[in-house]
Length: 213
Length: 308
Image (cartoon, rainbow over all chains, first blue to last red; front, side, top):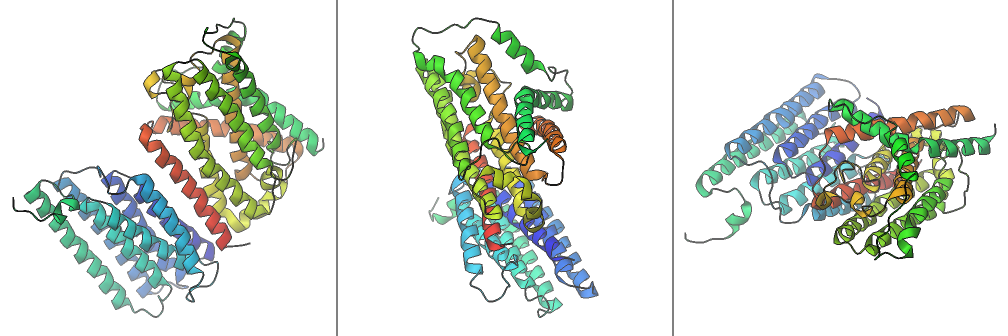
């Protein structure tokens, strides 16, 4: 309800970003992104002054989709595809950690020039960091599952950014976005599953080479 | 008792208590993993045993090998004098003493590494190269942490950064300070060769980092090196305690008591980490240290973003 608990939740979001960035075990990454989804569910409760039905429904919907359904689905995907860890990312973990740190600096530098937020509020910089680190993961990882995690993180960043406009964004739009993400990840999961069944590997690197076999 | 005597008492307490911190860590680890374990005072017995023995020197070694153990203890003692161990004020303080702190410790390590190379043993050279690699990465996080503390407190000495008026900074910068403490604790584990980075219990040369460097030291020399690393652990632990527990409103005796309790708590914390975590593979260690450093970097950015 207070300013400081909002800051604390936003800090936890950034820490989970870095945790995903530095973890090679896919199930741990999925656990972190589920944790991040749960924090995101708490955010509207903290930013809005009173607990209207709208806010509570948004919070519950976010937690169900982002912290329970999607991670559960990704877990199903890695179990079916029988993969446990990201063996060889395109950029080593150390490099992506440094990219994440650079993104952190850039996000805070850019956020101070933006008119949306008051100085001292963490909402905008944290949203930018989460989007950027999501992009880093999406670009630098070879396995399709972790790319889905990166996509979810990117979407989480957009969601946080939406919090600055929460009063003006109607409930239906938020719900629609949640549904979009859900369908998107659902389709990706099925694609991952099928890629794995056809090609014995879900490394997206192999998909960039077109060859008659 | 005025402030300076409390600093002196804290200094003596750290000197006496240092071997017990590692002992408490071992004790906690063995309790959590359901084993008998060595007594908490084992290191005192070891030191006493080693002091009474004679030393054996390899014929290939030079004076550096004999000088290094003394320097290790001397530099650690010197570094301890600039840290406000009682959470109020240090024995020696001057503007920018945190740079001196880092590099005086670095000097001790430099001679330890030279002594390891001096033996001409390939194992020791390997341990030395690992130790130096990790130490150079630790420095990044250490300086970022000190920088953050400096920005928070507008002070340039460790006494100012970790000393008395610290309590009011917690109100304004609690998240950043929590992350700094976490970073310092992670660096302590790396710097003092504890579990996620190095396993003090292993005696297999291929996996060792710190232990392998001191294989050729014996007798009083080994005692000095063991005591030096225990002291380093205690000093860094006291630093973590100083960040976490502001002691502005306590009496001098109270703050020294907090130091003693805090050091034992740090020992318990190390023991919990050692019992619950496996040692990281060697290529993973830089990632661990980069993680700790980005924690410090994040808190620095946070402090700059939110000037109190």
